[in-house]
Image 1 (cartoon, protein in one colour):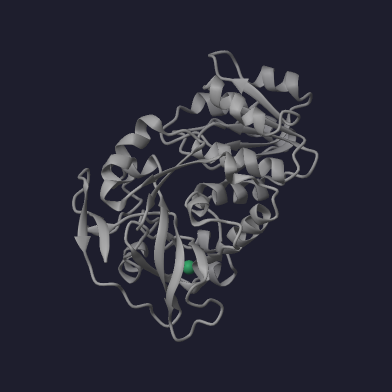
Image 2 (cartoon, helix red, strand yellow):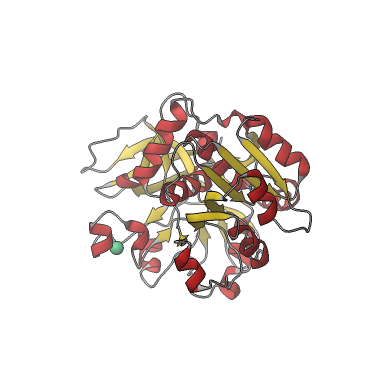
Length: 365
Ligand SMILES: [Zn+2]
């Protein structure tokens, strides 16, 4: 099979020929049809070893590719729930499966939590990379059956190539406690995370989705999705929170911070002041802190600041059910397919041409 591999940090991907892997007893072999390309991948393969030395990358050469979707090609002898031919999204999050957090169904709390084809979070990551060295920029990959999210006929594999960031927003909305009829502020709303968060917040029944970003045209596109409920606030150098509080008296019930890697903390600190008493702020972006929190006022207002990492395969199932029911319309996304051989070009183009509505992905033949 053909696979795009990275041979050195900061280098380009090259197309290598590798044998098609064999799935283990509780694993599946997936023939990948589409895999997302995200702006942050360039950071990961260029800067992460210096920016975040505590986040290990797989030993090189390595296959990358975070959000893979395709068709099950073969299953291990212990697999019962899926069969060859089933269409699936592969949640790339691996965990040890043995620690107390894994046992209680909270894999993202595992010390060894690791993204296949991306990076890991701890000492146990290298062993998991070795066990699952394949990912979406290869024609085939293996994965534990528990990582699969089944796709109904109405949800395409190209749409599923966006599920990583959408699922991250989904899990964050759950943790925000947002209830129907409430209000939510999405900071960085026109980015890849932000657009997914806005679509899902509407599906969660938010009465007001305050979208905060710089680009007027992209904000207008968000408003067009639901002009009654989506309220834009353009970043123009003036303070965010007075404007939000004018639109939503008393402040917003929840805030999702989706700003990208190394974004300055000032915007976050400003926006947080628009959160109502008892509200929750969920961090799913890459803001470079620290974020000052004054404990006494924070206590008096009963605010909560929550970090949220990725999403479980079970949350992926819930999100897919929501999409399949028509509550989330992914037709607003624009497909931008690239052949595997053009991965390096896709990574260049995405730096200047991407916005939250584009769906850059590798389309395998
Ligand atoms: Zn574990």
